[in-house]
Length: 119
Image (cartoon, rainbow, N blue to C red; front, side, top):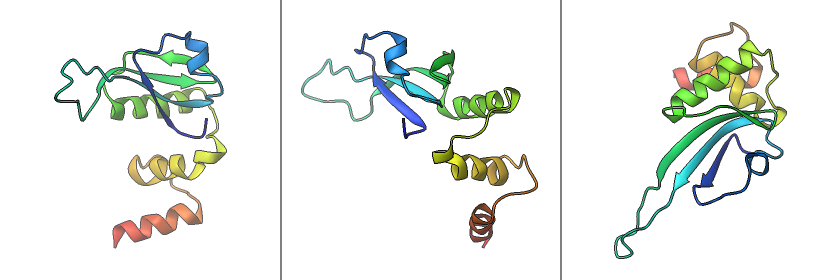
């Protein structure tokens, strides 16, 4: 999986293992795209469930919202001492250093972004 956030339709009934296959870590969002009224289709699908996936397994379910899910994901990564996936390394490093202010050192790429944001 190359994305950090994965969306699923509620109608999908495959076992959990099929939905998380190949997912090293991420936030799984289940959407209800129920169109009861065919005349007025829904612009925004309803989120029915948010879960945290680590190493192909759902480790935390019923997370109340997406920002909380992202904070839980960071907490799990720190507590389990896991490395960031290479394809999302700079995304995680930026959030860790600039937004959450967790580490004093960062890469030159993240430092450059921080300088641009402060201007």
